[in-house]
Length: 153
Image 1: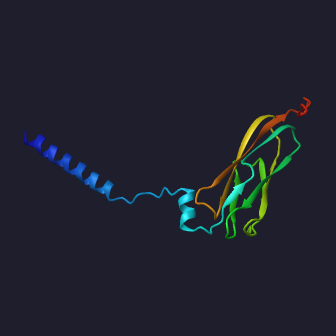
Image 2: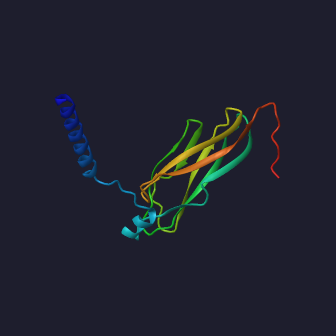
Image 3: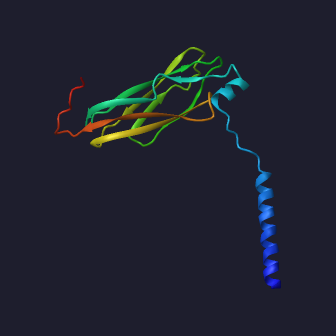
């Protein structure tokens, strides 16, 4: 009986310590873009014309490029820290120069079209406008070399 009592006391102490420890942890930040904008109303604002581009059907082995237009809708200069594709099949080009208020830049994405079939690739863009990265998407279908591509209507 004494063993049971000691075990019960030990378990209670561990639980109380765990609860106290969990309550003393700092809360994680869950600020929205609007709240961050309220903190600094002059900060840059990254506005993409579109975040998904359907490349349609493209012939296998012939790379195709598209551009994502990015406008700084804020007041301070916008900087692109990085842009990374989800795989090596997408080559990216973008300027490291600041985008002034009201001005635009582009992120060029070239898909190599090496593998036949449907594809959906993401590009993760990190800027000084927001603490969360922006996800851009390329999608389409690569038509095998021996099959003609359908014309878009």
